Image (cartoon, rainbow, N blue to C red; front, side, top):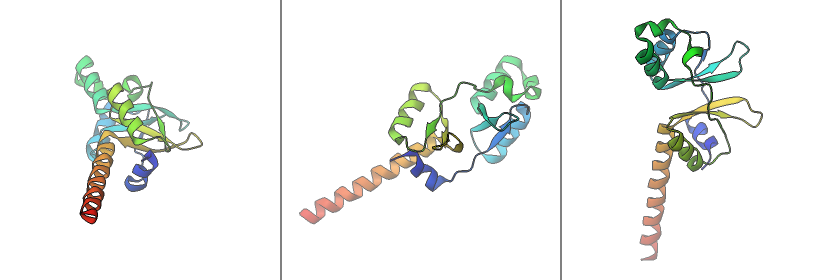
Length: 145
């Protein structure tokens, strides 16, 4: 299965924030939307990084509650891993596990941001595949018996 299949089911919605926004604003969006990460965009709209709950925790741990008035740009993950719609779900799962992160922005064939996948999306997809394969095997066995 490919990443595009996850986006087909999940949707292509992208929740983004400007790099100049404060951590307090980012925290509010993360909480309101019940998500774990935001895509960070520069003023020109280009992908600048990703800001996750983990980035928020690190900022508060390092600076205290005053970090909430600091910019997202200061604390975001700038070196991020992206994937493309045609990537295999298994390979993205491996990259996420190895890199110890839970969200990956998805680029289309024109290198434009077209979605975001999380480890939760991947696990859900893998479970659905496993259930489907098990049902197919049960049907096969009962038909041949």
